[in-house]
Image 1 (tube, rainbow, N blue to C red):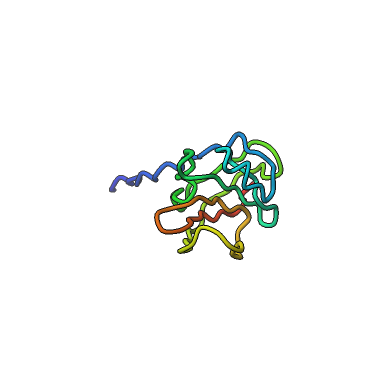
Image 2 (cartoon, helix red, strand yellow):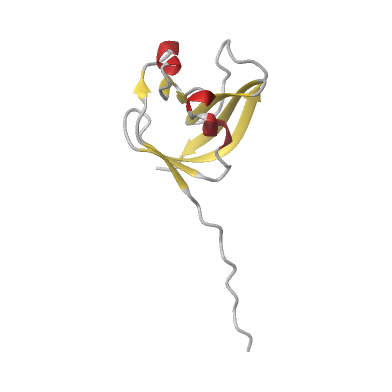
Length: 117
């Protein structure tokens, strides 16, 4: 009889967002280096890369993000990333429950998330 082997599974880390400003469309709030609930359908959090929010565009696929307060409260999992070669203009349409947005070199980066709870 052979012994069964267990293959270790990678640990799913959770990134926690504990605060943000509810100020849809407020460029002034983003310029004040705040993470901002920019839009509500889908839920959309945005912040400047140079204010410490560069991670918003690069949360690894499969990682959980827990938002602990406000309208976006819940647990999400990152499903995809998108980029635009511009830093302004109309919001693109994404099929996601939560979008995380920040500027990246040459444009704008997005992490797309779906709610898990």
